[in-house]
Length: 94
Image 1 (cartoon, rainbow, N blue to C red):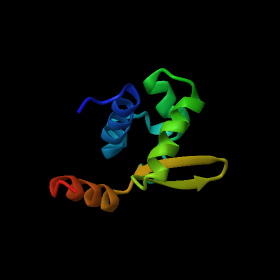
Image 2: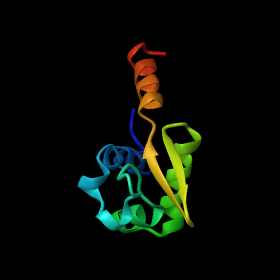
Image 3: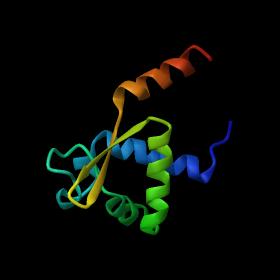
Image 4: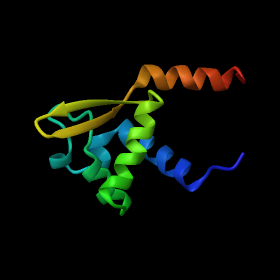
């Protein structure tokens, strides 16, 4: 099965969000260092903020990411429990 360009971007996002401090500057992290803003993701991907936000929102709707609002910003982080559930489904071949 081939992965679409959007799929590759989303895989990359999930990888980066596994260890946000290793992939994003400290100013783009929430105070706990567990999430990043769409602006930081857009800068790293080299795409408009709205494009990055669309990918992040898609992953959030799937339940793979969680959000946290702080002041005027939304921070995205992985939902490790949900990711483990999905991985288990694929291991069982549905």
